[in-house]
Length: 359
Image 1: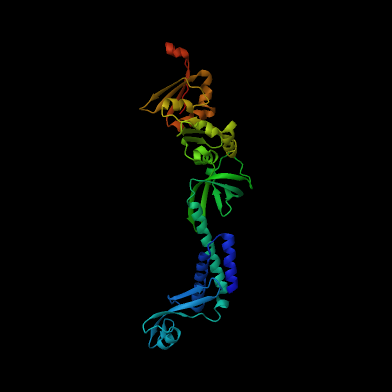
Image 2 (image 1 turned 90 degrees about the vertical axis):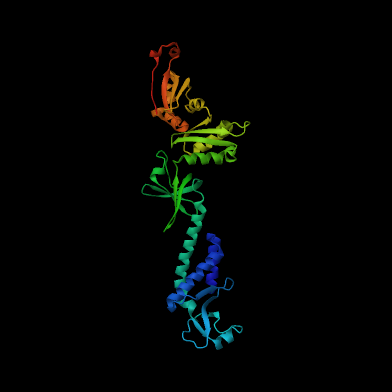
């Protein structure tokens, strides 16, 4: 059995990446468990040592040197101790080898079962440690199967779950598809680490920009705010820390290459990139892009922004089913009231003004 143990440890170390020391400790714990079971001992001073070079297994028991032995499991005579441990004295504790002659044959099967259990536990711990620090990060996986409404994603070393409420309704999660996901939660369970993914989280868009745009990744361009309706549209506000860098241009890329890669990953989701501005009037007007805004009036007490746009821009400002105005409100943290603009309003002829409200 000694050669088999060493061979198994070497193979598992290569295939699973589990350190040899961890495996050796698992084997020793397994063999100790097998010894206690088969030889029916409760002596707490028993230990099992596996020679990492030869694979030989040795069982030791801690015994006290006494004049007269009353319990051989925990005591050793002074005469025997003098022969095995010449420098020992009466009352000393020694580690005496008690390896049974047929220990390997008796314990092989039991040890194998416990070894595999410990190896699975070690592997689960390694996977948990690997992903526990990656919450709010992005990961690439392959869709392997579906369990009810849950999508199971293969992350190579483990599997993760994409629950229904984190799925984009317009996306087709075909088995074998490779996609990027946002890690929302990593927790331990009795069956191993549970990793929950998302395709709807705003953080997915933010992380994609960090991957695709070096200026964002290096901190020269900040993502100040982000509002998203998964599968249809996202508005993102960016600011440059370097006056020589155009934050919007950096995110769009040469001929739109950078933002196009992100849009492709999001399966066609449209992205509006807006320059951040500390002046709320300017910021709100830009947030309603692509509509042209004529006037912005703010009520600081109610946090309501009254937005006036040319009447031919009214439907564009509001957007389909109010989406453009809704995203602009979430991006700027202002309630938005959009009204049609008639130039005659300045002359006191407000009767020609049409109003629409969207919050």
